[in-house]
Length: 117
Image (tube, rainbow, N blue to C red; front, side, top):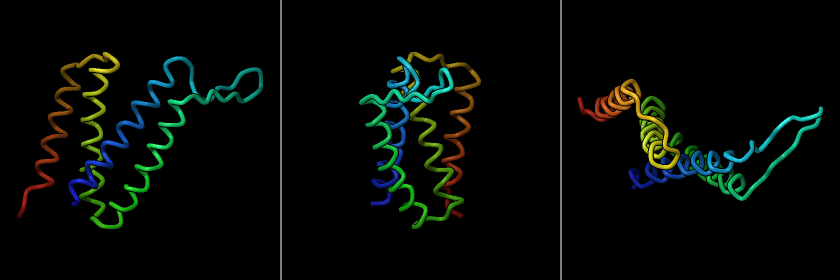
């Protein structure tokens, strides 16, 4: 059950970031022009905020059930990996050697976190 909840958190957080990025491609959701604050709320913004809200509830649950020194690095690492992959396929961002080395270090960190004594 814990793997499902962790996976759900990673999925909702990653999707929230992707949807918000898609929505911000045309214009930022909040801007400041002519001494006025302007809101450009789109369906992407609404869905992204809702996904973030849901992921926050899952996050609070995970933090209450697991050691912070374990759950925070683990979930953050998985979110980084999903976002890194999605940014390549969805946004056509470039994979550099340093980025790939960074992801490999993150994956090795996940392995070390899950090694038993």
